[in-house]
Image 1 (tube, rainbow, N blue to C red):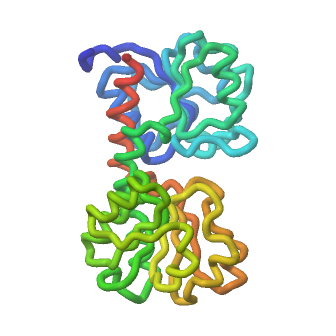
Image 2: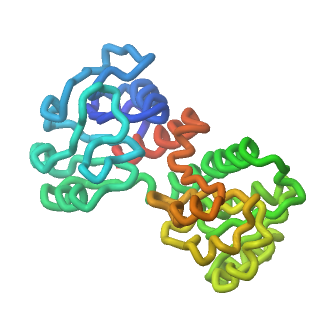
Length: 293
């Protein structure tokens, strides 16, 4: 469909950060009519209806867009444009027309259940390859920015361990290698070892990590299960840094790291922090197409 297909299509947004601000601009350019909880900063358009609550969102919207940051455990939207709390409820999902598309970064189990119960098409953006692969770029750049700011040594000619060679891990390892860092790809699968060999990374199996990790100056974890437990952390040098990029709560025992005097940081939502315009443009490319499919 062409760009005109969103003209006068009613879409609701529940909040967001700088990424969603960019997305709003793109949706407006495509002619959409938006209902938004709270007034988004720096945007003023006759095509925006500002509402105060979920109850004011019309039940005939064709799509509802929640922030990439999602909700907390109580289903409260983490980033909003309003001063009041926005908490997702079953009543809200029950009022939406069956077939409405509901976009969110990752959905809590209740949201999945309600979407299925009321015929809502749930789309978890962070799980889409198209979004995740493109978001891996600002995530990797953000991780590198952190260690360059926090460490007194260069990445060049020092040792970087990347735990997990998935979408983020591979992009990050490739960038580190390009900056002259001695890059170690830590993996389990033969295909990941083959990819590491092809890219010129040193290859380390997770089962051997306890023997190898003492070499690391920089440790980047991308695996969303506990990898860096207390026993493994005892082998990490005190002058190293750990940047955990996995989804909350990460793959590091942060309490143990603190007890051991290690520098460790859980770095979440980097695309929205380091490159919000680029991250918003990714959403602005994917979401309109999926609405119209």
